[in-house]
Amino acid sequence: MHITRTVSLRHGSASILVFALSLFLVSCKQENVATNPSSINPNDQTPVNSSIPKSLAPLVDPADNPTTAAKVELGRHLFYDKEMSVDHSTSCASCHDVSSGFSDSRSLATSMGFDGQMGNRNAPSLANVAYNTSFTWDGRFGTLEKHAPGPIFNSVEMGNNFSQSAFDSIPSGYNSKPGNNDTNFLFKRLNGEPKALRKDINGKTYDDLRKAAWGPGADRFTLDMIAKSIAAFERTFISTRSDFDKYNNGDKEVLKYNASAIHGFQLFTDTKGANCVSCHSGYNFTDQSYHDNGIGINQQGDEGRFAITKLKSDVGKFKTPSLRNVALSAPYMHDGRYKTLEMVIRDNYLKGGKHNTANKDANIKPLTLSDEDIADLVAFLNTLTDYSFTADKAGRYANPWGN
Ligand code: HEC
Ligand code: HEC
Image (cartoon, rainbow, N blue to C red; front, top):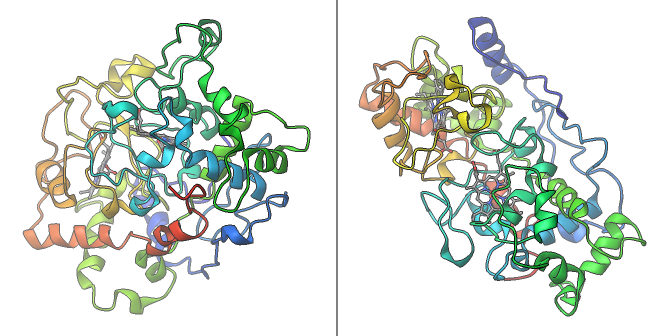
């Protein structure tokens, strides 16, 4: 694990108190974490993300992949590059759009990959994703570097093929299919001509960017470079400036006319009330753990964490998602079954879960909430939207290809 955290909160009243304290008493100045791409010098090897607010634990980069400005810049190009998919149609950003907190902005219940193919899961938001300790809804990847090739070689997402021999060496979990012959499409497109000579909106080619990030000798892409550069870019997805953060950092004016949200937060954290905090805890409102929250296994039979651990006690458990920018990432749950936040609360949590499955979490119990309480919880969740984060679509998260 590469992340140290000061706010690591689990169940129990003592930790809930720490949660409340960390939210209410740790008042600190928000520093500006934005880096405008025009101010990024690709040759700059100095670390990025050096000014994360004090209320958020410092990000510790993996020893073999320090986040440098030049790598971030290359990662941004790869993240937005549709040439990364087998039919030139789909980039990471197709399903992870910053306007929706880096979730799918097409309001699809489950993702659509290249050639209109439908996946079976909802694209999660990537706000503060570097703080996660596992990746995907069932947590089958342990680092961003290990995860990044996943969608690139996923047969439904970006569809790149490997030769059979290369395929045999891909770790399991990538859901890839071997190609018929040596179709190393991705590398041909990125290393070969003429696609490799494309210029971005500033006239830069991959050659320029790759050498800036990986040294003058880096004249060809490797999968390692691609994965590490994308991961470096993802580590800059830092969202810390929602109204809730401002309020929490002492700016009480922000929610002056929003008593509903303040009451919603009280319900959210009340262990005898809605007790959402028993799982949605810490700075990013996730305990980084897996639970059956009572929604029940869907018709596709997605058993979640069980597929990874093969433990019966994990059937139907999914990773608790972060709730940062949650108002922007509808529809909800791993299969996108709920269209609105109100439906999440009304159709699932209010009833103490919809289904009484074997592994349903003990903290999922029928709740006594009035219509007003439900509206208040939604009002609180709405305050977690960070509009300066999404506005960086025109700044540090801009599409460098202009398409
Ligand atoms: C076709 C849509 C699609 C594309 C393209 C796509 N993703 Fe995703 N992404 C998803 C879905 C769906 C999930 C959840 C997958 C699962 O649980 O199995 C996901 C999960 C993730 C996660 C895990 C987040 C977490 O905290 O669990 C990361 C990180 C991520 N994607 C980054 C990327 C990157 C980087 C790319 C490009 C290389 C990419 N995605 C391309 C749909 C997509
Ligand atoms: C027992 C742990 C637990 C508790 C308690 C809990 N949640 Fe969740 N929550 C989860 C898990 C796990 C998921 C993902 C489930 C899935 O997709 O299968 C989730 C999903 C969600 C989502 C969807 C987010 C998204 O991006 O799709 C919202 C919104 C949410 N919870 C809000 C709440 C609220 C509000 C409460 C309190 C009323 C609450 N949760 C209580 C574990 C919990």
